[in-house]
Length: 200
Image (cartoon, rainbow, N blue to C red):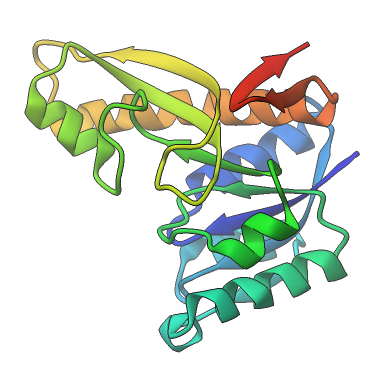
């Protein structure tokens, strides 16, 4: 059983997708801890409703980002976390966290990396006029949205799409793919060799 820590900043819809897949028996994992960079995040309510332990940090905790990450490392280690899943976590992870969990921090990005990195991937792709965008699940490293790619899924941009309708379909794809990737990890099928991900 894979013990996960989940990092969030907002509503926690991807957290909920992970919770639901675990409850349905399709993901062999347990969420040991949810950490939020925002004490008002609704994702904390989702975690509490599921009986999951939480840790809420606030802006003052991030005055020294490394110290904030050391707090997260300490909390995750105390709960026996093996892998960390970033699910709408709107902060870069720093050296203390990356060093404590090498190639064990997973991020979900709402575009087909390396295109449209950063905090506004959906809007950037939409405004650029691409015909296909999508989602990327990758390992986090010290560069923003640049770690080894585990999986991607394309999402076509329809002629009548608005930013809102595209965002809805992107989120639907996220809620499907992210738990599937976590299940591959839970089964020990994912490894990294020379910045490339191998899936057995």
